[in-house]
Image 1 (cartoon, rainbow over the protein chains, first blue to last red):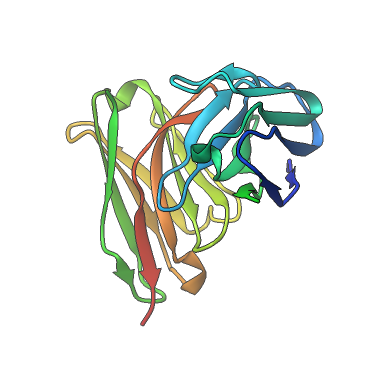
Image 2: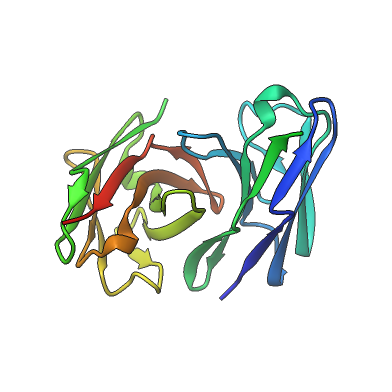
Amino acid sequence: EIVLTQSPGTLSLSPGERATLSCRASQGLTGKYFSWYQQKPGQAPRLLFYSTSNRATGIPDRFSATGSGTDFTLSISTLEPEDFAVYYCQHYDPSPPTSTFGQGTKVEIK
Amino acid sequence: QVQLQESGPGLVKPSETLSLTCTVSGLPISNYYWGWVRQAPGKGLEWIGYIYDSGDVNYNPSLKSRVTILRDMSKSQLSLRLSPVTDADTAVYYCARAGNGGFPNWGQGTLVSVSS
C-alpha cells in the first residue's frame, strides 16, 4: 500500500510570496497517475494537475508541478488571495486499482 | 459540461445503511470511470471506490466488506451503499468522474451524519 506524506502540514505565507508544497511517496511512482487538488472551505476539491505536471483546464500558470520517483512538488509562483486553501496530492495505482490521498497541506495567510 | 449531484438522507442511524445517489448530466456514465470519495469533518480525503465503464468495481480495502457501488445507466445515476455504519462514517460524500488517474469533475458533496 502506497502512503503519501505531504509537508509541511501548514504553510504560512503572504500574498505575492512563492509557495512550495511537497508530497513524498512510500515507494517509487511512475508519475503517470499522480494528481494535485485544491480545496477551499465548503467546496469540493478542484483538480489542478494530473499525470504529475499536466495542468487541468482553467488552472492559472502561476501553478506548476513536478516530480518523479518518490518526490513530487506543487509550486505557486506568486500567491494570490484566492490561492489560500488546502492542497492534496493523490495517486492511482492500477494494479490493484486503488487510490490514495495525502493528508493535505494548508496554505494560510501569514 | 458535466455535472454531478449527490443526494440522499443527511442522517443515518448507527448500524443502518447509508445510501446515496449521484446523478450525472452532460456525459454518458457508461463511457467513463467514476469514483466516490469522502471527507470526515475537519479531515482529509478518503477514496471509497471506483466503478468502471465495464461495470467492474474496486473498493478501498478498509471499506470493502461494507461498501457497494452500482450504476443505473437508464437514469444516468451512480449509487453508494455503506452498511453497517458507525459514527466514523460521518462525512461529506462526493461522487466524481475519474480520468488519467485523477478526478477532474466533482459533485458538490453531501453531508451524512451517523447518529441515533
